[in-house]
Length: 298
Image (cartoon, rainbow, N blue to C red; front, side, top):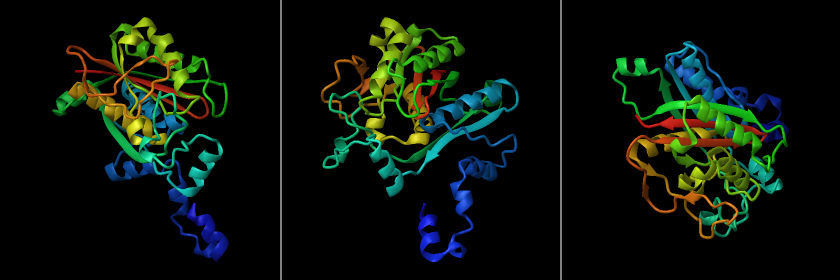
């Protein structure tokens, strides 16, 4: 973004040659490939806030098809810059609680008014079970199933009925050979926007039925802000650790839960039940992208 200022103020000869690689959406995937010598492919799903989760979807497909034994899947985002902040603010997507920024990200709260932009990165190594066992890998969880769907509704707004998200949830459970009653934990997309949180509840209710009342739901963007394309990968890491440590992440800033979203939201430290754990991690992005993964304890 600074290259545009350089071009205007100093002319084309002063624009850095690394500007193009820095702008390439596939730059992070290429960097990982170069660093690790990975030659089976360096893929870059570009699906807004669902990108990190869709990377896991594509990675699982590569392993199931036999095209890869090990895949590094993740997401990265560094969008805290005046231009994207101004653009999101112009859309009325960001919280205006500027006097109390630590309280601004409040998913499911009656007084939520938009998301707080964050940035970061997360990555997971997924591999075929026999390959992991053969090399003595420490296995944290099983990636049981994934799904991606599209709303085909609006470029930025989610379908208020949550139809695409519902299809993604049901398809991911089917892919994992899991039942709604198996789910004990959900890491929700939950961005803290007035228009986004309710459709996700509607979708969870439609996919899980009455069992949704027994599921421990964590809205971790309350703590991290919205990491955009990195959010799905980072939240997948959180879900894996929740399963491995049997502790659900805490949702903060939920002072007055929206009565139209009657989920069991984890607001204080809570242990997950003993026995097998099935957990979901949801990601929904601008453009109507929906991606869901199903993770299991091992």
